[in-house]
Length: 449
Image (cartoon, rainbow, N blue to C red; front, side):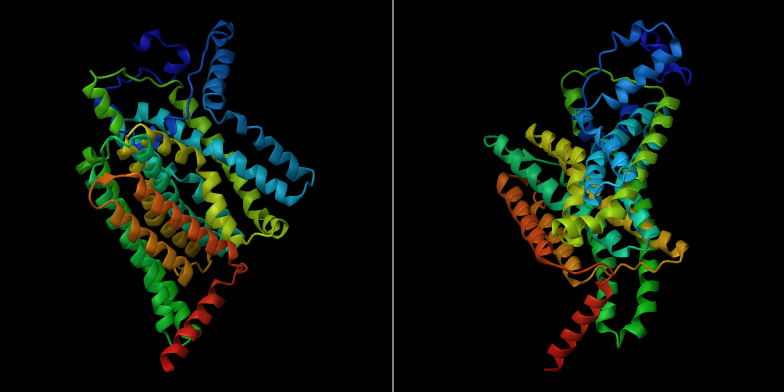
């Protein structure tokens, strides 16, 4: 089978056979992104006489044109031109956001291609690391500019978007499209993710409660920072344990649903990589560099966009950034919900929320610690309350292992209400600590009364 492939697919030596065991490395994230890919026709490319040029053109066609989101790639050079020639900053922000959308999907595609050569374990670890690369890179650039509020807002928004918008839309659309069918999913995977999300919620709530119970900000600020850093280490340990659980001891709980469907239908077609290992690695590094550039533009221009559009930074960070940045992954989850494959949809929504809460957030706290920046897990009362209600509602919605459109509708309405709350909120940047102090003073006044 491998011998019939073009030479550029064999640049790293012999191609591994794609047995069912190898395909175990394909997670729900990969399955979700694959729904937005389109088959490339290499007829014209195969006629190019020069081997290296043919290899380059084939890779270019697979990576750039092999997605239904390729129409958004022109936004990347437009964003660079807009920044270089001094266009209005809101334009740079908008074009950078649009450019991040196809890049996030292509990173998922490239990690899947590399996983074909490395096997399921390394592929799963690579996917776990790069699954939310866009959010992590934006957070790191915001940290480098000491915009800690943007870090907190954007990561909180990603969690809320996955739990309420993606999962809600998936359950609603899947319920409408399959009205006459009973929709079921594996509750065991949802239970594991729910437990980890509750652990993350506890780690977020304790610093806020500690500040409210403290004597004064001068007394509590250092202990809160120390508590946040200790909690972050605990969260990272828990996430590493989750990876062992997912990739080794209980990986059958996280296998993509489409694999079992193929087995039931006679095994399906064995899939092959479309680019070589080193080509995939180079493209992955290049895509990450472009994501870093656009993320820097987003962080630099978010306040200008907020002033120009009359929208608070909190609304842009919590609502707009996650919706646009993860549009490809979200669309894939909804498509599989239409096909009544809820295990994949839940794997995308809950898996991303868990990864951000248990990996990206604590990693940012530790990174800020190394950079000498004070970043804690105190996300303010409003933000933490929204997160707590969202996790609780989702846990209740998924407890029986069945779904219908009403569950999705409730999650969507909850997301709309939370979005409206942050839309009317006009808290300026770097004012979370001030707001927390005011909240604590108000609570003290109530109790004294």
